[in-house]
Length: 384
Image (cartoon, rainbow, N blue to C red; front, side, top):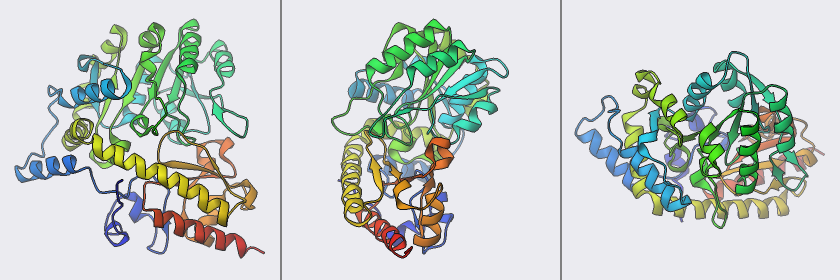
């Protein structure tokens, strides 16, 4: 398993996770890992620094795209063509630049809250209008509301912005549900942009299905946003991929302004290549740590804060905590920060369906999780 860096080392970092709050706060909000970089990535970046290789991206270098294609083939049985890919800074840019070319001004774009908070802003940035079709929730599991999506498309929405796997609930959509979605979208002559940034973090024993593999319809009307950013903790290096499987979407990628590619980070694409090709053993060990951390969190909550509930997840290192029973109101993250000195991401940021919830980052040392729940339990017990 992968071991997190020591707290003293982590607090020397200058990224958002470690700079946003004073040292008495446990930062467990933003999606950054506390683990050391995969050795292959670290070695490659150090070598680049030694030779002063810190210039612009070479858009003709397909090595990062080829590495992703090999990873996808070996991991998911999908062999996307590097010739149908394009580079850019991050998946948010993939989403915005794709939607700008696939929808008209004001067109509806469906999202499925509770969902990644920037989706609410990326859609209008691309010129669209957010159409919310919340996930179905039976209090045990989440699923796509295919009937609601069908109705929203019938009412005029032109696109679906799919979160796959779904952040924050860790839902891995089944092949059958994605196949049904593709047929619904095709029937309405709409499009899908599938954000698959968390796909490499699918838990052991669970099958992730890339959207572009489920049907001819999906290949025709879909475009995928892929990155090693979350899997290998590369957010600050800036590298992501547009991935297509149809001539239509490939032409969209080829028609993008040169600057969309030029703004990608050279280090980001180097690290992407190394992660997908030579970071797989590290990723497997890291996933084992994350899965153990989920089990530890479940145990800690049951023992110390039974009023809280961990919703089950099949992917990501992000725990979706149902804190409605704890009595901390609609924004329990605010209470946890003030009274427990634990920084969580507020559930309401993911949409109205997140009221009473909070998201906790589990890409950390087990001791961090234990300390966080100890603090939250003390804060709860002191309420009375």
